[in-house]
Length: 89
Image (cartoon, rainbow, N blue to C red; front, side, top):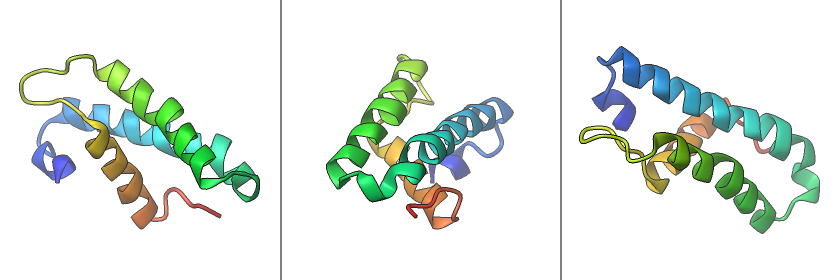
C-alpha cells in the first residue's frame, strides 16, 4: 500500500528501490547461503540488525508525509518474498 501511495513521486520511488535492494542483498549474502544452518531466531536477528535497524537509521526522522516503521520494512520483505525476489531456500 505504501508503494502505491507514493508511486507518483520519483524521489520516494528511489528511496524504496534502495531499501528493497538492501533487503534483497541481505537475503542473498547472509540468509540464503546459510539458511540450512540458521535457526528462525538467527534469521530474525539478521533481519533486525542488517535490514530494519539500518533502514530506520537511514530514514532518520523522515518527514511529515514519508516515514518508515518496522511494519513497513517487514511489509517490504513480504512483498519481495511474494514476488520471489527473495527466497528462503
